[in-house]
Structure formats: structure tokens, C-alpha cells
Length: 279
Ligand SMILES: C[S@@+](CC[C@H](N)C(=O)[O-])C[C@H]1O[C@@H](n2cnc3c(N)ncnc32)[C@H](O)[C@@H]1O
Image (cartoon, rainbow, N blue to C red; front, side):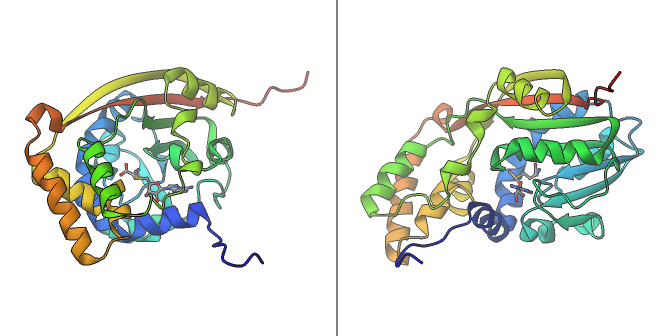
């Protein structure tokens, strides 16, 4: 063993980070991103679906919306972060399990539809995850995906970077080398990803969203579940509070338009293709 070298498992670190911040995620981040899932759910042909698997379901906060799009369906969910599932409400009890999208322990051809909403870019091998989802879908089953397109980051990101650097905070501990945004951040890339994993892309498109942050809401999001929250943890209490105070003063001076988060979202609806039969 090499002395002094920390062994890190990025997937386990990601799950632990989500678990720890589950309550903050549900309170601050989920309301910002969930309106962005509406276009997918309203475009998916789910009216006749009887069984749906939500992969990376998190706290299941989108279940009411999924259920509204698929009133006759029973929902199940899996997520790598146990804390996210535990933070969900009673509707999740008995219907969710801790599972990595790359190793789904589920009987094949079990589901009419699967969803991966703001998840696939987190998975270190998206091809393996898509093949796993393919296996659990019945023939002709449908998959819905939502991932990020162009994302400039939350407003005030550069202010946070300057102030965290000035305070001597360590770099973001999240291992960016396993983040796969760049593999799927355009309709063309997402189409290629699903098509090479035996899905037929029925519709792939992008949408633009904006969210006007109030100062307190933005700071709470960033200090409790955003990138700054992870760097702030490397500072002692005094340095943390001084750094946050400096950022607050600067963010308060931003014009409302500068506090607007503008982001692109990529959607895909894809159907499980049948294996070509030998003639
Ligand atoms: C941005 S959250 C989205 C949660 C939920 N789909 C929603 O829209 O509210 C990403 C979720 O994906 C989960 N996740 C990330 N990588 C995963 C993996 N390899 N297997 C299963 N879940 C994963 C995280 O634990 C987290 O709950």
C-alpha cells in the first residue's frame, strides 16, 4: 500500500454526499430543477404504462408528477444514496431500494417504462447503466432521460471561487473526473449514447430555463447543497462565516438579472429496440 495516499471511490463519495445533503437538496435544489422535468413527462407516452422504474429517484420528489403523467402505473425507484431515499415521503416506502444504476439487481423485462431524471451524467459508465435499464424494460419499453446541456453554473459562481480561494478553502472534493456531462450535453451526443445501447431515439430535444433567485435562496442553495458547500467544509467556523459574509455582501449588490440562473436542458425519449434475429 502506498503511504499517505487516500483511496477514494468516487461513486461512494457521491452517494455519501447526496445522503448527507438530502434534506437541503429537497428544500432548495429540487424546486429549482423540477419544473425542468415537466416537458419530458408531458411528452412521454405513459398513459398505458403499468410499471415504471425511476432510476436515481433521489427523494422521489418527482413522483407526483410522474404519477400524474401515468395514472395507471405503479412506480418503483432505485438510488445509490440511501439518505436520499430515506428523506423521501411515505409514498416511497416499500417501493425503493438502494442500487447503483450500473448494477441493477432486477428481474429482466419487468418494466414498461424507465426514467432517469438528472442522473445519467453522474454515472461513471453511462453505457453500462443504459444496458442495465434496457434489460429491465420489456420489449418495446420506453426510456425518458433529462440531462444538462449548456450550464454556466449558479449565479455568483465566480464570486464564490474568488472568496473561497482567498479564504484558503481546499478545492472541490467531488471527483470531477467521473462527471459525464460532456458526454451527453447536446441532443446529438445524447442521441448517439442511447442509439449505441440498443435504444431507438424517438425524440431528442433541448429546452432553455431560467430561475430568478432571491439573495437568501441563492445563498442557502450554495452553502447547503451546491459546490461552495463542499469547499466551505474545509474552513473552520470563523473563516467559513467570514467567507460567506463577504460573498453575501457581493451577491446583494448583483442586479436581479445577474441573479438569474439560465440553463439548457436536454431531453430524450427512446424505445428499447429488439435484437436483430438471425435469418
Ligand atoms: C440530481 S439528483 C436527481 C434525483 C431525482 N431524479 C430528482 O430529479 O429529484 C441525482 C440522483 O442520482 C443518484 N445517483 C447518482 N449516481 C447514481 C448511480 N450510479 N446509481 C444510482 N443512483 C445514482 C444520486 O444519489 C441522486 O439521488
